[in-house]
Length: 353
Image (cartoon, rainbow, N blue to C red; front, side, top):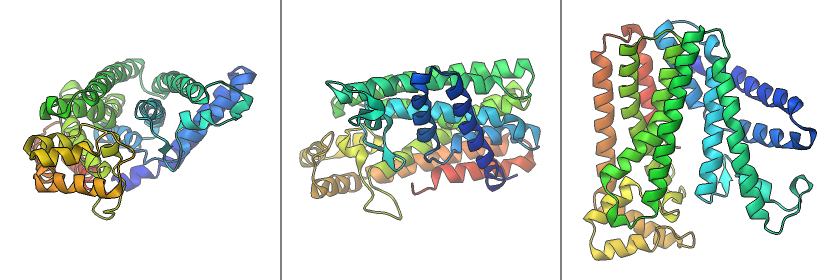
């Protein structure tokens, strides 16, 4: 089974997501039902559903059969993703998500849901934070559904607890890094955030949860976790490059990560290796939404000229090599299913959006 075959389950998964919101809508207090509609629209607005696909993949790697039994767990990861995105957008002051307004901006629109507030932005943030929190019971309930044995469901839930805790630690570190001078943020600081915040919930835990529900034993789970962590960090390094405007098929892609002031490896390495003039060029852009296109272009030139972009590419390639060496040497993952892991690696790392 390959990713395209697993992807055929996505429409079924999305119908399940929609059904979960409609079911809860009927149970919610009448005055709050419209908020379930907002969550429904936000979650189903778009997205690659890659975390859900990795749950299906983890199950297939172990069980070698149709992943239908773990569709509820795959839905759980999409609920979790909505939870993270809603809160991330508030932290990052983002305006847009998946081609539409972020949830806190939508809920701040004048007259939304017939509410009035002296500070609509504060109201929108408060409502969105709470709706993000509401995604957790959706996540937990979905993880506890499905035909797996009680022991497997509890082990899957334990992995979810681990994933949530590490993601929160990574987010805390990310916020702290963003509030520190660039010269006080190290490469190891950046990579630890990526390993905790991105790699765990984007790659390794979805794979491991699927494998647990398929009956995977601890040695296999540890191999999947190690492979997934390395691929997850490489995935985030690629995401940082795209978010800085280095999209191979779209050189004019927005550089939101720069104007949001994110301490990416690209920025930290360029700051360390650049001249005083280079650092001044970067400083004119970092954390400044008002930066002009020419200032942004100059900052990207610094990232190129200091070798920072090439260094990130080197780190991505090294992480992928290590993950694939582990895969090649694995005696736990069936040889016939190893091509699926290679395809996952390729999809995570060689992407343009």
